[in-house]
Length: 88
Image (cartoon, rainbow, N blue to C red; front, side, top):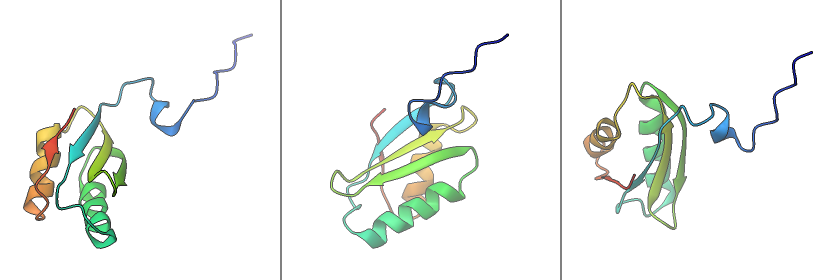
């Protein structure tokens, strides 16, 4: 009988690396209101799988499909007033 699949190590690993993961440095990410606004922008975009904001580090982490480029995500953030630098 087929072996059961091993449990995923973390939610981000469910797709075995098929989802690109990009971290953005956002200097204006300085308080919870900004974090909420950034999360709203990220969740409003198509092809976003998961997103998380690290307020102390002023970064946002995004797991997204290959249908959207990191530059497109950064452009959406910039349009919302959050200049974002792609960190890889």
